[in-house]
Image (cartoon, rainbow, N blue to C red; front, top):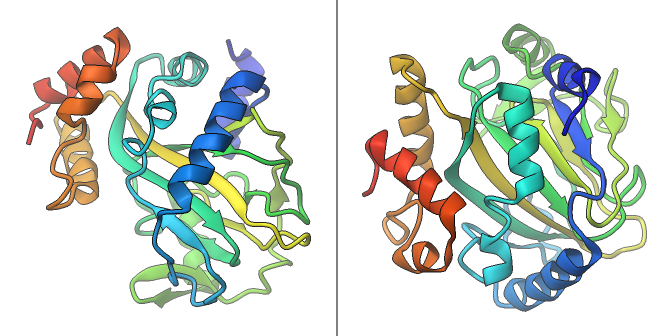
Length: 265
């Protein structure tokens, strides 16, 4: 359970680190599953480095260990503490073995009002010199997010970037994590990550959520748009039949809620 101070810090700064959220057994299982799955994943030159970065998206069906992360009790409890309601998996998930710098960016249009969250699972210790997630605290607030882009930003094929020295962003902090820690963050934050100094890849996994919109028609519409953007012709469902077969009551409840909001296809 998060403290009132932790909840307040998330709302003010846009992130919280759930220390030791995963057990050593869960971490070991995920490390083995990640190594198996990422070896079959395609090379991704998204960042233009050409250094052998691999990514798999969506990844949650690649191994049973990954699917179990979606409704992880520790993550679900933290999101309920923050929002006072359930959060719904929105179909976004990506796994990385990253050997490139990830440039400073904000997910989506800078200044957007629509709220989406990510959980970041790290399989190795990460600090400022070893590929940690870096964020500008508070930059999830729409006006602050947009102000940064207007003053210092540019479009890279419709992706927002910053024209600043990436290692000298005012107010930026790097989030030191150990295997088993989970970062829960608002992905409107301006964020980045850099190559590990030891030359090893950053083994990371990200899963996207949106708070249940309840009966707010505008929030329901935004959630539908978010889910629709993640679904693909070869991946038309948030939960496949196989995922539902292997899921438990928590998954059934979340899937039923999504269906009630009008998605099954």
